[in-house]
Image (cartoon, rainbow, N blue to C red; front, side, top):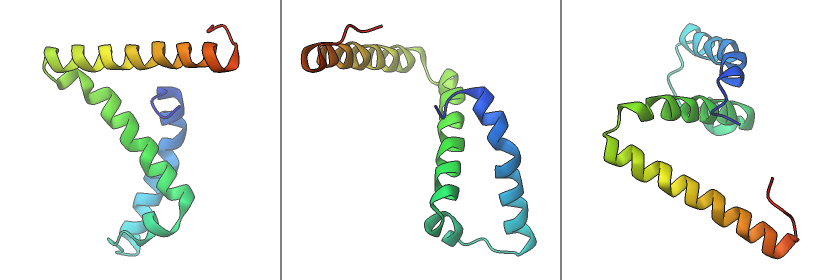
Length: 90
């Protein structure tokens, strides 16, 4: 999961190296991110972590609404799995 901080810290050196390499070759284009699936995934994971840890900066009503929406989605997913897969949510 991209929001898992242990995975973030494991990915960070590779991300930093990628940025360093781009700086060294003076390539500020987005071609690397477009053409390399692994690099796009890495960038997406870094953005997900940034969004996750920055959530605390949002006003309380926004945080509360977001948390409620996520909880509702989890419950709906559990209900759907129970109905269609005959699985008891863990």
